[in-house]
Amino acid sequence: MPSSLFLQSDIKNPYSIYKTMLDEHAIYWDETNKIWAIYSHEYCTEILNSTNVHIPIINRDNEQKLNEYSLKIINHLLRLSNGIQHEITKEIAMLLFSNMKSIDNNQIIAELINNGLVENKIDWVNSLCKKLPVLVILKSFGFKQNDCDFFLEKIELLVKIMLPNKTTEQVQSINKITEDIYLIIEDHLTSLPFYLPLLNKVCESYKISLNEAKTIFISNLIGLFIQSYDAGRGILSNSLLQLLAPENIIAKKNANKIQIQKSVIETLRFDPPIHNTRRVAISDIRLREIVIKKNDPILLVLAAANRDPEKFNNPMKFDIERNNNNENLTFGTGGHMCLAKHFSIHQATEALWYLLENYPRVKILENNTQYEPMINARLPKNIWISLL
Image 1 (cartoon, rainbow, N blue to C red):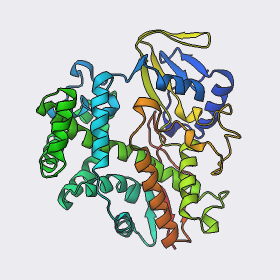
Image 2: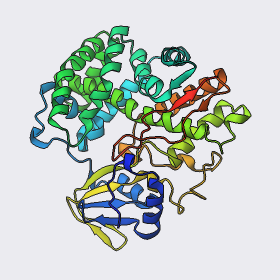
Image 3: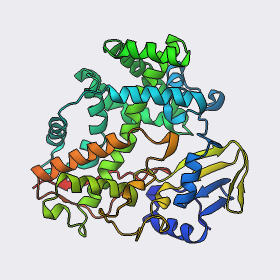
Image 4: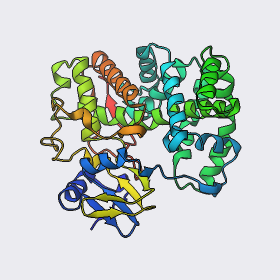
C-alpha cells in the first residue's frame, strides 16, 4: 500500500491515490509512519467533531529551543490549543476579526499587480497570493506602511513556526524575528480604541490575568497573519488555475461575481490548498469495526474526503452548481474550523473579479505547475500569467 505521507512536489496527481484509498481503505493504518489515515468524508467529519481527539502538541518541553517570544506565540495560538484554552483563544480571534475595518481591496490588488508586472506578465503567486491576504489584515488594523513592509518581508519565515519539525537553522531564523514582530504588534494594539475594553472583557469572562490576555491577543493577531498567508495563498493560486483552465467556460462568458465565488468554493472542494491535518486520540475511538487506540496519531486526508462519492455527486468533475460544494472539509468543521474561511473566500473572489474585469484576455502561460515540497499543503510555486 502507498504511504499516507508524501511531498506534494513529488506527486503529479495525488487524487488518484485518494480515489484508490476511498475505494479500498477509507480507514488505513500506515505501518511505516505509525499513523491512522482517514479518507472518507463521513469519518473525517466524525473525527473533526469528536471530543476524543486533540490537536497534537508542537515542541513539547521546548525541545526545539524556541526563544521567549516564539514560545509566547506558539503556546497561545488558536490553531494549536485544546480545552478551555481553545475556548478563550477562539473568542479572542473572533473579536479580532470583528474589529477589522473595511478597506479598499481593489486599490491594494491594483498596486500589487502593477508592482509585479514584467512586460505584461506577472507571477500571480509571488506578486499577489503571498501578499494580498496579509496586507489586507494589516491595513484593516491600521498598521503603518513600514510595518506592513516588514511583515510582508518576514511572513514566509514566520509561518515556519507552525512546522512540527524544524531544522536548527529554521529555529534560529524564527527566533531572530519573533521579538520584533511581537513588540510591533503589542505597541500597535495599545493604540487601537477597542483593545483595552476587549482585554478587560476577556479577563472578566475567563478569570485570567491582564498579561495572559495580552499575550493571547498578540499571539492570535499573529495567528491571523499566519492563517491568512497559508489559506489565502493557496486559495488564490488554485482558484485561478481552475478559473482559467481550458475546460472551464466561466471566465470566457463574462462571469459575474456570484459565479466567481461559486468557483472559489468549488475549488476548495475540488483542488484545495490544504490536503491533510492531524489529530491525536485522547481515548479509544471506534470507526466501523476498527478501534483507534488512545494516543494514536491520526491523519485526516481532507482532500480525499472532498472527493468522496458518498458525499458529492460525480466528485471528479469541477461543477460550480453542485448544491453541496460548501460542505467541503478544507477549513475543517466543528470547534476547530478555520476562522479565516469566509475572509479567504471573499479575498479570492474579489481578486479574481478584479483580474477578469480589468484584464479580460488574461491567460496562464505554463501548463506544468510545480508545487512546494510540503506534506499537508498543495501550493503552486509559481503561476505566470499574461495580462494582454
